[in-house]
Length: 219
Ligand code: SF4
Image: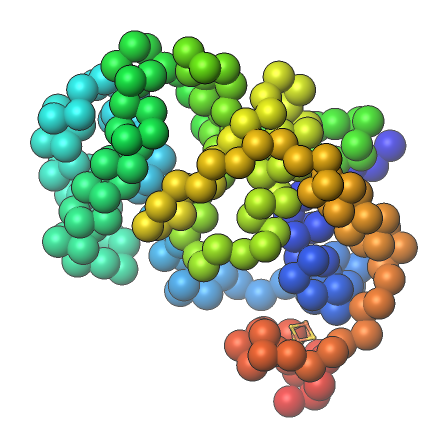
């Protein structure tokens, strides 16, 4: 049975026409500078977690940020900006999980998930094992979107021993419990994706900065 990736469902939810062009016709574009910046920041945030979990001490992790910033000089941000963002991130990590980290919290990153039962595959950013059970976590460097919560919920459904999670945005962490309602919504999106329903382009504000404009509207 062919599994559908959660990222394809994300594309479909964002715009069915885009999912059709990308996943039925196989039209892709190279990553934009903004996407590359997001990827680098994603990696920077992962390194902050690595450091927090390895050192298990807030002050040591904060001191070590200087070394981390040094190794991310290629990211399109000044040293001071990176340091500010890193400190804020570390504070968020400690306010939510400080106690768990100091008591030996474990985690895995980039975990592949597959569920034959749901017909889905995906790769979750983090699985955290704490004294309060397992959490799934996603890191998002863009603006919060409706699908972020649906995506996290889907990873919870695919990872059988977790019904708790959170999304790390740049400014704040948003906690979330598994929701059956969201799960049904994702299954509906999957059904529509499989049938490639409603893929006729519809002009919206998103089209103004979409690479696929010329395919949809010939401009
Ligand atoms: S141009 Fe608009 S309709 Fe076409 S793929 Fe992009 S967002 Fe969708």
